[in-house]
Each structure stands twice: as structure tokens, then as C-alpha cells.
Image (cartoon, rainbow, N blue to C red):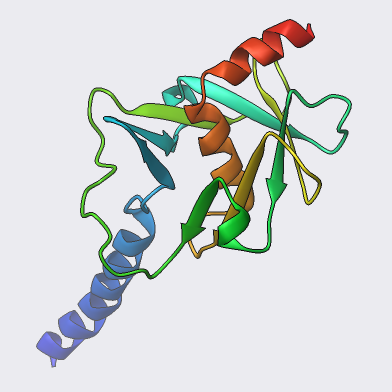
Length: 154
């Protein structure tokens, strides 16, 4: 009888451990590859080397990103579940650039206006792991020219 009590008390602990492990393991972060460098969304606030922010006011934006309805019209396309994906294409390495999304804009930081209106970049996103905001942040973060645009806007 005592074996059954031990077994009955251990099973819930094992199940809790399995579920905790699944929720505690880091999920793959949105990432793109630009030449020999991978650009990835930062998982921790202090990890990001560059930050972008978003605005609903086009007058405050330093970069405009248009969400398009067709991948044929996009400069950058993200579509999940396509065969032939390169395994470990965005594995973390010394040359990985991490991008964070800030809640408030800071000096020399790109401010993105994401809309359906024409912009500097056109993106198409149909993904389970990428949001349009993450795709826009990665594209703008990968392009170093827009930090100068932000500096010129000051």
C-alpha cells in the first residue's frame, strides 16, 4: 500500500516537471540572415545591441514599413512551413546582431510606422512565429542606414 502512495505522489510531480520544462525552454526567436550575419530578436532586455520602437503617428516615424497583401510585392517575405528551410541558419554566433523593441523612442533609434500605406520597406508576413512587428523590427534593425535617418530627424 505504501508503494501506491509513493507512486501516487510522484506522478503529479513528474507531470508538473514535464509541463514546466516545455514552458521554460526558450522558444526559437524570429531571425533573418543577412550575408554572413544573423539578425535575431533579443530574448532578454540587456541582450539587444540595437533597439527600434513603433509609433501610430506617421509624423514621428523615421522609417515607414508597409504591410503588403502579396509576397510578389514585398521586399521581405516571411512564410512558415516551406520545405527546404536551412537548418541552423540563424544559430547564435559571435556575429549575431540582436534587436529589441523599446516601448518608448530614444535618440538615434529608428521609429517605425507600420501600416498598409507605401513606405521605405514592404513586408509580407504569413507566419506562426513572426509577427508583422517582429519582421519590421528585424528588417529595419538589419539595415544600418536608418539609424542615420533617425539621427537626421533630430
